[in-house]
Length: 421
Ligand SMILES: *[C@@H]1O[C@H](CO)[C@@H](O)[C@H](O)[C@H]1NC(C)=O
Ligand SMILES: *[C@@H]1O[C@H](CO)[C@@H](O)[C@H](O)[C@H]1NC(C)=O
Ligand SMILES: *[C@@H]1O[C@H](CO)[C@@H](O)[C@H](O)[C@H]1NC(C)=O
Ligand SMILES: *[C@@H]1O[C@H](CO)[C@@H](O)[C@H](O)[C@H]1NC(C)=O
Ligand SMILES: *[C@@H]1O[C@H](CO)[C@@H](O)[C@H](O)[C@H]1NC(C)=O
Ligand SMILES: *[C@@H]1O[C@H](CO)[C@@H](O)[C@H](O)[C@H]1NC(C)=O
Ligand SMILES: *[C@@H]1O[C@H](CO)[C@@H](O)[C@H](O)[C@H]1NC(C)=O
Ligand SMILES: *[C@@H]1O[C@H](CO)[C@@H](O)[C@H](O)[C@H]1NC(C)=O
Image (cartoon, protein in one colour):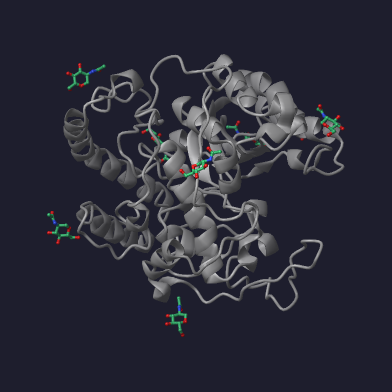
């Protein structure tokens, strides 16, 4: 009962703060991050969720991006952009959890951490997903309805290093197999290396989320470095595609309340998983030595458990990767079989998230509203070339969509108490 009251109170403050000037006591912001307002999206992107057939096939064109930090390294924290983002955070709401360390082989050091009490809800130590610190949003870990498969792929977009398995290989496969949609957790360094793939993913109706700039274990990063990892990924996705994600997934699942709180204040809900294919560990570029037959066995077990009636408590969010030839091959091998047994949807759908981006022209289908009226935001081809008419159209859209966001949040908050995505 107490939880519900708290939720309604924070909901009330959030709804009241659904205007540009409003402030909210919630850690989760109520408006698009101001520190991204200077990022100008490239031309030619999809302007709304696709309601019909989606583009497939080879990419055309080239994109020249400038001004980014070095790829695959934690960006500098002293740039004006990162400093602006740091200064926008209320650090009084960010837990003072110890910054963790890792050994040279990348293994986290758990020495000295009180895992029994897990004061920082450190996933790597305990798989904790319900924060211990007040006000930090709870992670999303599954799709609630039994028989639902939340389809997610990490580490993309798969750049030309992937050879014939580079995008649009997987995106074409999804489009050609029931116009399947997925959540894609993007590495910023890959977004600027394969920007045409990111644009295609948006046009194809996938949900773009953040997976950091350089894929570090985030609990080993200082506060300012955490901000820099998030900032440049959001910057890259916004410049390349025009949207600003409200979801992220920690590399290796490595998150604690400190990192969760920074993510929330930067506008992102933490999304974990409850079923792990371990596909990244198969032989392939950046992979390991796990026999593919082991991964096959996981898929077979999940299908069997659903078919024999024992998988009846909740749906799932399943961790897969668009990392290399091996993971893409595995994903494409199993998707058609999964689709026969499960209702396969992106996480935004099973959590009734109408607007997974701050740009509310993109209205995604949800379990609560599987066929949203798309007239207000128009079809991609209907997006106006005249700035004046397109801006008046988007004003109408955001006014109408505020109501939709609020009712989706009511449903979500009642069900999940502190989940704000
Ligand atoms: C915006 O929301 C705040 C409350 O957060 C309220 O005080 C203010 O009047 C609102 N402004 C407008 C223009 O609605
Ligand atoms: C990319 O753009 C920058 C700045 O406009 C320019 O200096 C550079 O030559 C361009 N690079 C390529 C490969 O076109
Ligand atoms: C962290 O420490 C700072 C400085 O002592 C303090 O202002 C802040 O409130 C602390 N944060 C939390 C969440 O306790
Ligand atoms: C159902 O399938 C799962 C996964 O293979 C298995 O572990 C479980 O024993 C099966 N239960 C029954 C009742 O068949
Ligand atoms: C759900 O599965 C459990 C076994 O895991 C079984 O005991 C129970 O009867 C099942 N419930 C339904 C409604 O099928
Ligand atoms: C992927 O490439 C690696 C070599 O980089 C090779 O050993 C492996 O067999 C390939 N896997 C698939 C599924 O093509
Ligand atoms: C989404 O909406 C559907 C239909 O109203 C409802 O059954 C389901 O519980 C909702 N899911 C969540 C996560 O709130
Ligand atoms: C969408 O809603 C508007 C206004 O309610 C209505 O006029 C229009 O026919 C609807 N379009 C579709 C495709 O349902």
